[in-house]
Amino acid sequence: MAVAKVLLYYQFTPIADPDAVRLWQRDLCELLGLRGRILISKDGINGTVGGDIAAVKKYWRKTRDYPGFKDIDFKWSEGTGLDEHGMSLDFPRLSVKVRDEIVSFGAPGELQVDENGVVGGGTHLTPGALHKLVAERGDDVVFFDGRNAFEAAIGKFKNAIVPDVETTRDFVAELDSGKYDDLKGKPIVTYCTGGIRCEVLSSLMVSRGFGEVYQLDGGIVRYGESFGNAGLWEGSLYVFDGRETVTFGSKATVISTCSTCGEPDANMVNCADESCRNRVVQCASCSTRGIAALCQRHAEAALA
Image 1 (cartoon, rainbow, N blue to C red):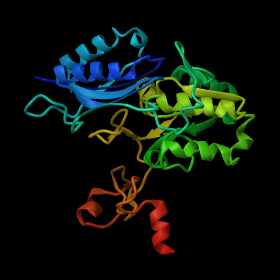
Image 2: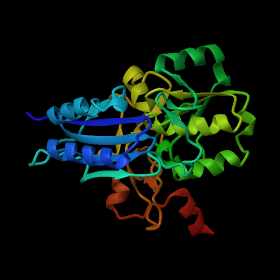
Image 3: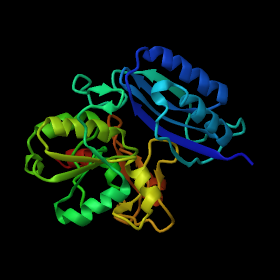
C-alpha cells in the first residue's frame, strides 16, 4: 500500500546560479511525481514537497547530492494521502521559483549568508537545550513567535509574545517600532514552524541590539517530535498545505475558540473579507451554516 509523506526543509547557503538550481529541482520533482512549493534565491533554498514515500526518499537523496545541500535538516511528516495518479493530496500543484528571498521579510539587503549559513543570527537551541535554558533562567526567558499572528491563535509556546503581524514583511516595522526594546536585556527564544523564519528574524533582532537571542533549532516541528504534548508547546501547529493543522499526539490541548460561537475549536477558515489573507478560527458547525468569519482587524472595522 502506498504511503504519503511530506518533507519540510531549508538551507541557507550561497547559490551562484539560482535559475539552474530551479530547473534541476523542477525536473527532479516532475520525474518523481512530487508536488509542493520550492523557493530558491542567491541565499539558499526553502521547500515543502509531498508524494509517495519511495519518491520522497529518492528526492531526499538526490537533493543532498548538491554540495551546498548535503547538510539540510529534512523534517519528515505524514501526508494526507495520494490521488488515483499517486500524487500528493496535500499540494494542488508543483511550484518551483526563484525569488529575492527564500522567506519574505522584505529585507534582502540585511541578510548575510556564507557557507555556514546566516551570519549574525541567534544561537541555535535543540529542544533539550531549550528546556535546560528555561530550567536555569526561569521566567526571564522570553518566547518570541516568529510566525504570522493568526498561526499562533491555535498553537504557541506557553506565555509567548505574539507580535501583531499579518505577514513576515511586517516584522521589520514591528521591531523598529520600539515596542520590544524592554526585552533587549533578556534571553529571547525565537521560534517558528520549521526554523527558517527565525534564521532571519533572529539576525534582524541581533542587528537591532537585542543582546541574547536564540532560535529553536528545527522549529516547532522538531520540538514536537521530541516532546509531543508533554512539554512547553500547547495547541495545534498551522501548516501551509492541504493538512492545514497537525498535532503532536492525540491529547493536544485546544487553546482557541470559534470566532462565531465561542466554542473551543482549532478549525480555520479564510477571513470573509476577500482582500484579506488571514485565517480565522471557526467551528465546522458555524461554517456549515454559512456564517461569515472575520479576522480581528476586519471585525473591528465592521463595528467602527
